[in-house]
Length: 110
Image (cartoon, rainbow, N blue to C red; front, side, top):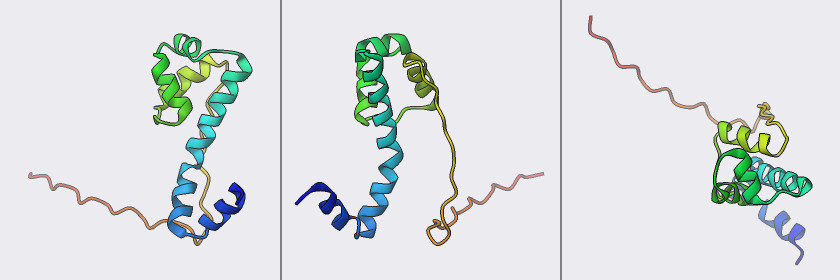
């Protein structure tokens, strides 16, 4: 069985589909990091040096083993002569998640 066929079968499971879609942005990010690193011909050590971090951190980012802060993304992007673009997109109606529960505010004694 080919991967595409296997994935198509798994995507019928709502729980699997939800998890797969949640990983999408992280996979896109790691793919972009690796692609830029290869296009620039930079080693992990060189990217790390330019970003002011360790090669281990960059390696974890490229493997998707670490979720970076925006600050770290900007540093790595700068090391790769790139820029970070973040955007929010509305979820199609019918697929929206329930609203988050609001925590009650503590009352202040006057």
